[in-house]
Length: 321
Ligand code: COA
Image (tube, rainbow, N blue to C red; front, top):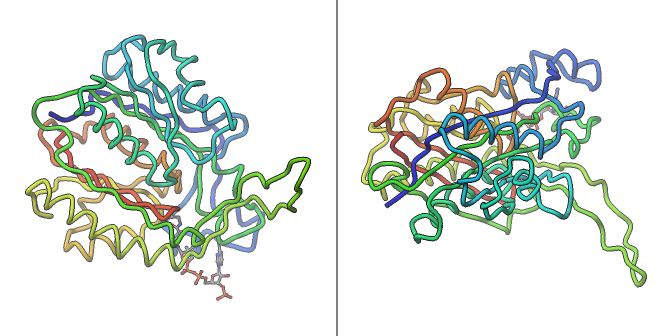
């Protein structure tokens, strides 16, 4: 028993920001950003929130999958940029959708969040606890980005993607692996609220994303191919058997490095980062939705989904569409 994706949806903020727009804000250029990252533009929220974007993406996934919200049994939102400390984003999305029977909670594994949420849904379904789930990745990273730091503000975008999954007897997720390495937590981080109460008041550091870009780059190019090979091995498949790689969209050069290590041609790597940048946990489900709506995903195709990010966290799903 496993889960298969029966519907996809996505939602992006209206406002588009080009590299030239950013060059008016910080000392950068369209040429530098494109050459080092492959990113051309991104969507940035001027009012859309993690909850409204996730709810929009979920509605589309439900419509695509032909399911009423009231039938959803599990609703997971992967996010590292929730609007509120409490209640969690998933409960707010549940309320907006009218998914009254769903158990709803958030999960934060940064850019690997959507994959970890998908695997959580898979484990619940395989355990016989739920029969279906809505799994969402939604981020408004623009609120935790330092817009004066050219080394990070050019990378990220806002958006949400969702998939509707249900139990299946054949196909679906064939194997998955996931890993965490908390010893490298400082490589990519964003501080939260400092401890402050009547007994202690610790001065806050800047609550913005801080990153050692080279370390993250090296980690991704080394660990992601290993996790893909590990998951393919569990599924009894080889790199040649994979029809499409749908990987976290952080940087085109990272994807090229991964493809090279796997000995796979770039033509099998789906990409949309040139248009939307790195949307953290939203990246994979938004890309999946674009591929699905473009008719590029045919039943029976073998897909590899792989994500990586802060934590450090990384993982891979091998699935049959
Ligand atoms: N525009 C122009 N110059 C920039 C710049 C920008 N937006 N950002 C950094 N630079 C400069 C640096 O200041 C540095 O200048 P210096 O040589 O005068 O000190 C120079 O470019 C090289 O910086 P470096 O950090 O070595 O560049 P890089 O080739 O490693 O590329 C990243 C930087 C961030 C694009 C790259 O490291 C990367 O993509 N890392 C992975 C990040 C990521 O994907 N994070 C999210 C993972 S989920």
